[in-house]
Length: 421
Image (tube, rainbow, N blue to C red; front, top):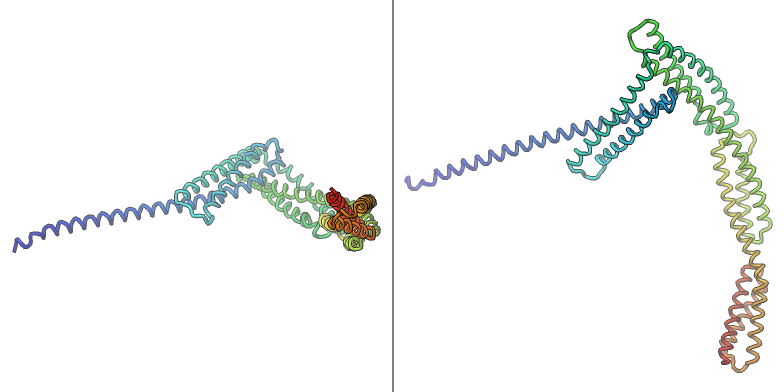
């Protein structure tokens, strides 16, 4: 019996080996899954960091753009040139970072390696842009020396606020006056500027008062933030009021240009009417009459007394009407010129055709028995075409017909001379 069970130890050994192999495979798979999980978590964290870095950099670029305008107004372009260069460089880096983010967000599949590399580049670009602008903002904070010069700066700020407050009433009066002559659409870019400037000045005054209160109380709290907020609001109010003055100048210039265009339209309409009245073709005259009526109607509407004007839009409307008139008028002139040229050339064409027909007819008569039917047919057709040309009222058609007569006569002459060889 022991001899019959000799294989049992082998089976046990093989079973143990197989079990060990499966245990090793299972452990390897668990380690692989754990490693993949770690990689996935790291990739997710990297994407999150890239996204937050991009948002932070974009916000800082927007803030720095406003800050640069403010700094230029306060210190001048020469002193802010380095800031402007830094902002331009950060903008380019931010644009590159957004381009990489777009590649990550589009529908094109990306490998894990590509996504990791692009997210790392986004973080690097955004952080460099952010660090550069933070450094510049810090430099300007030092340059302003806000805390050290706060009392003197606050006095100057109050004086400037008073001066700009005086301009608000003038700006509102300007807008009211402009509203009598110009349409709401023309005033839309500046119509609310006086109110917005007043709101900005109120905010500036509140910030300045808060800074003054801290200084009066000899508080240890810094006032730089309040003074900077007041300066920024004052700068915004000044820009809004300046825009009212600039807008008024632009409206007046636009209105003057519109009046010049309307006066020029008078001349163009007069020329078009003269062309219409003297044109020989009824269809062309009718087309001219139609566009003249349209253009004159637009011109009259734009000149209507008491009508609020939008110079830019009105000029576009007038130019569209006059362009339509000019197109038809140019076509009519070309047709008129073609008629004149045809009329001038017709006399010579008729004379040439008659002369050739006479020469060919005399040759055929002199060789009556030898000239064949083909030459005589061409000659007859030439005489018929000449007769049509003489009676045709349209000089262009008459000229074409006379030239056909000449062609037939020339062909007839060549055939006749060939027949007589």
